[in-house]
Image (cartoon, rainbow, N blue to C red; front, top):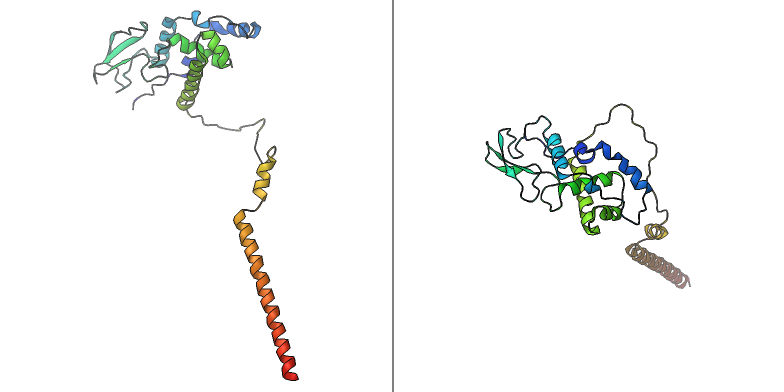
Length: 226
């Protein structure tokens, strides 16, 4: 079975424990100006080493297409020279360090993506991330959206065991704050109104008909008696 080619959460977030001091900088800095260039604190070399260590922890590179461990190095990327290219000896296909990962196929350097994910882990807003990484807000929005959806899709399923406790549970019930919706749910539909009205008219007609027949019978009885 082909191994999952997703990058682990550890590889995405916990890339440098020494950089935890950045949290203090975030709290102390004025959000109206750039805090510091976190992407300048790390290098592409460090990020690619982290990717390889977490993707292939045993040190043996596996082909993402056939899972074979018989691969050979095939030079480096022309744009991100730290990215190693490989060729599989089994299926003869090519791949690199980022193939089948969330970081593949983008023009932004790997260190920018890692920095973006790191800031997301600190609950930094997209606006502040754009200032930190010197990117447009639209680019940051696309990056954070892709990272969130990919992490959710590729995270392993968790099975809870033993006793599980919840502190608070919010359940939306009723139409609190939406009185118009409540009125609509209570008010009968126009079709029901029409049916009800027509039914009432038919009932009145039947009653009038019975009353007319009774009057006619009584009138005839009196005439016969006379």
